Image (cartoon, rainbow, N blue to C red; front, side, top):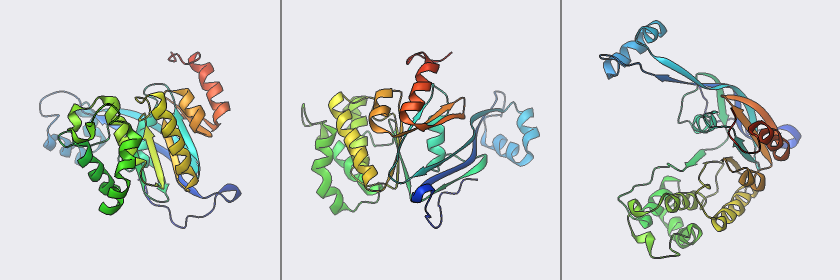
Length: 274
């Protein structure tokens, strides 16, 4: 079972302070089979109560998404997560954030992890302005803090460059505009651990440069940043360390240049691996 706190906050190697410790973490999805009654809540409860034999009888399929992954992240680090599609990157971040249960092993964190993804929940029927306030309050900022940073958030996102979009409902935004606003809200606050899942992929180069500069600022404020991206240049420009996951396993953990060199050789210079 995951432990979402880490007591003591003691120093790590060379005096560094660990923020996330993953110890032989396994994450397993269970997919219900088809058939009469198998998708009902009552049937699911019966399978839980009767154990794994009932799961097999009901045709429940298990997907081992993360396999025995161990690493320690430290304050001030920006860590890239790379891997081909389905390698377990997003699953691992959700487990660190406490959004998915750990089957085996444990995860300890120092501070509150915040997960930002392209599908992060904002309310589509509300205006961008209202979502800025709601998002800031949800992160623990006071109304006065949100008000003081409001214009900076809007300017950073760039969504008003071609009109007064901040006063329109979120459902009228393109996916890129929505992703930029999500990142801008999250980046308005210093985080103990900020995890960014492909949120920079939809922005133009100008926004990416602002985002990369903001990530460096977050690192300087003693936070830790995890960045999932299929854009190796963003990883290279932003991160000093990379975790490479493949088929749920940690294949390599090391300096960005070394890991990306091996990864690009594996994928054939950026093409999908077989």
